[in-house]
Length: 180
Image (tube, rainbow, N blue to C red):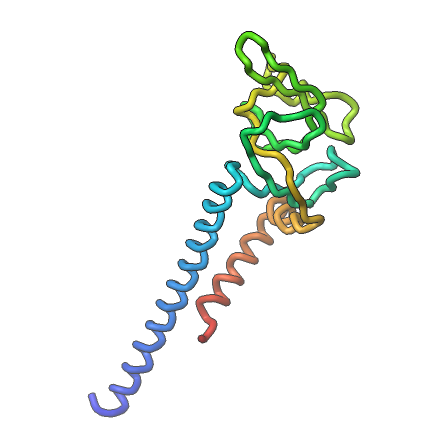
């Protein structure tokens, strides 16, 4: 092949190697994010250690777009605490304040009633059909901290999916084409 052929082949193989290295780097970034998320789940005891407030039902305390940090401990839930809970039949968790806690003497089971600070009535209309109280297994965690407005990125990407795909594509292209 000669000198020119060997040089072209050498350049071609280096480019493939660089692309492969960038793809591996991207994979390591994604894997690291997943490991950090799982680590947070273990440390906080919550299946979702970070959630975004999606509505104005908790204003003025929490506004739409705020990020909440959750922790789930063995301590009993008390009136006044802000909890994040799942309702049977709904995918999106709800962030509201506990307004009543009822402990059954016969079973020692705790039942919880919640309400959004900005809502008129309690959350019984949000619960599953026929459900009047939340049980412990519905609670994902207690709010222990928050970052205002940072969650708007998530809200925008959820409400306008083309922005999400454009951003993911641009970041992937940046990672793959960047040089060390």
